[in-house]
Image (cartoon, rainbow, N blue to C red; front, side, top):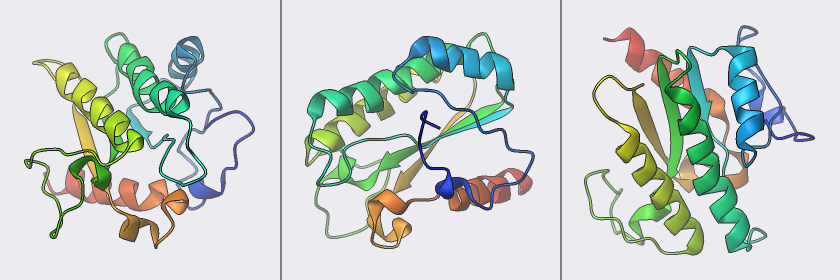
Length: 166
């Protein structure tokens, strides 16, 4: 979680989940968080730009792209079993149907461009023997009409169900 950030979005997560405060744009802080927590699984839900009050493209690049890079840089030397990160349906532009992840991306905003770039970073980071990365494409309906209200809990439950079915 970002320093000084509200933790209400984490309500309902198991007590065994470690919550650490670190600025996603500070690679050193992310490295320290990984070293301290030694996580098996990471749920990366940080993002900026999905609200009309988030108009700073530089901040979108810092959080959505550089933050993803900071997280990915930790994976090679920490024994993380899997990472789940949140993408965005806006990466696919305006569609008349629910977008599929194999469709061509057509970002419709600066935010969408930065989320698509983060997705491409993850695709690039997927290589034989590397930590598995799972993308959860989020839509406004998942956030009950308020993109800023997205909870990691439904994402965690979905991943847990998927892992148990294997």
